[in-house]
Image (cartoon, rainbow, N blue to C red; front, side):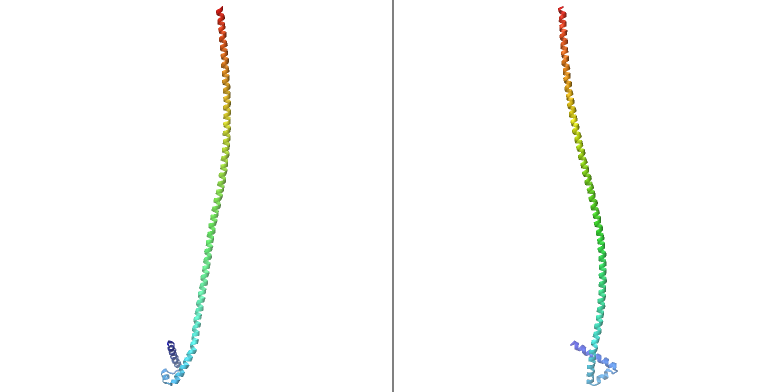
Length: 196
């Protein structure tokens, strides 16, 4: 219903426009024959029908043009955004990679230094332990020798002391013997003198 009304109004407007264009006033046209109005009406309708597709085509072409321009604009903006995103991603990745490489290099250097220090310390400790063991062995050897020498000296001293004691005993025995002999001699001499 609404479409029919619109079509009728459109027809009337186009008829009035056509009449104005030909120079005939609408009032005069209304007083004219109905058949003429009808014929004019149908002619106007056909003309409106003819013009409406062209207008619609124009509208569609303009809409298509706007659509294509918007699509071009959106695609270009998309492209620019993509390019920018790619660039920023690349930059970020490069920065992250650089940072990671620096970190790993630092870590590796620290690890190798630690390893080298540990190795040197281990070697030094091993050498020190070896030297300590050697010194302890030498000390043990010298202590053993000193103990042996002390034992030997003690044995020699004991021997010499024993010998000295034996000699002292012998000397005492000899002295005792001599004293006994001297006493016997003096006794015999006194007896001889008393007999006289």
